[in-house]
Length: 132
Picture 1 (cartoon, rainbow, N blue to C red):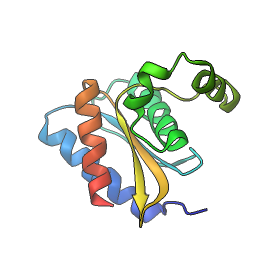
Picture 2 (cartoon, one colour; picture 1 turned 120 degrees about the horizontal axis):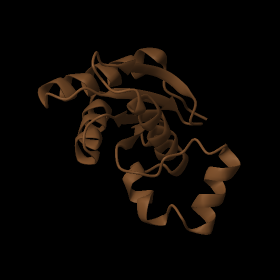
Picture 3 (tube, one colour; picture 1 turned 135 degrees about the vertical axis):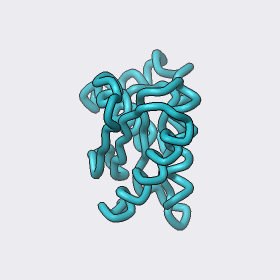
């Protein structure tokens, strides 16, 4: 099983926060490994506290399903995704704002963002992923 390194996670976060600054928004951003465990996290000055939980929850969902967290939004209440979320401990947030991170075609983690609109969060996460 491959995983993201701390150095790589920090590179992702730098690009994520740069995009947020370009958009003039204050966000929290989380990078998790391929098992959904936190590797790196940053909260911009002035970002509201709920983004701390939102960014991590969306990143966990993205890593779990190896796709952008927003793709799972319509299916979140279906038995299988809901059961997986419950078995995992309820930390997943299946809403737009996180993207999976791949290296050489292999899932290594995910980047989740909270604090902007759902689209802004995803755009920031995608900018981070592009830096990997």
